[in-house]
Image (cartoon, rainbow, N blue to C red; front, side):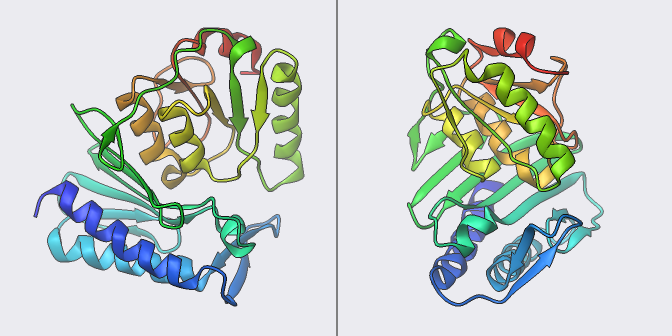
Length: 256
């Protein structure tokens, strides 16, 4: 099987587990220092399904997963997995969460997939190809100024980091058309990719939070950089992702 087929199979298996558990009583564990980050039995089951599917097809590939961490491999490929991005939304029956899978060759992302099993939306991109939503090409929006743009931002768990969040929100709030806060990083990145919003700011993330969505934005014609405008990496926790047209203007407003 090729990379795409394995990613799709893994996502569908994981999505079925997530969907089965949606709206039901969950086993919830608190993680993280702030006590506001959660993991459920759906996260664990989804991740296990993804890893099992990938390892069966590519036993020598490495895996970096949110819940179980690093799984070593002997090849140059690493799969980056978030089995349930937006766990808080999921636990409160808000249908905005996803299964996220990316594939890196050495340090370069070459495949990204983000799947919302409740809304049945599957975003996908491969290196050299146009980004897709349910197999149809998607493109970033054509809006050219902040004044005509809708933006969103990640919202951290610690109060200190939330102060940084609000500082940037204050800087842009009166310069834009609108602001949204969905609390699911990969799907918010995909909103930019398909033109629903013009930009998204991630002030503190893990590799599995951004790898797939940021790559999909680029394949949809958008732009992703660090806050200082330099080249992004899925291992760097702070990125700005836009439709490219507003990128320079947005970077000039934000704290570096």
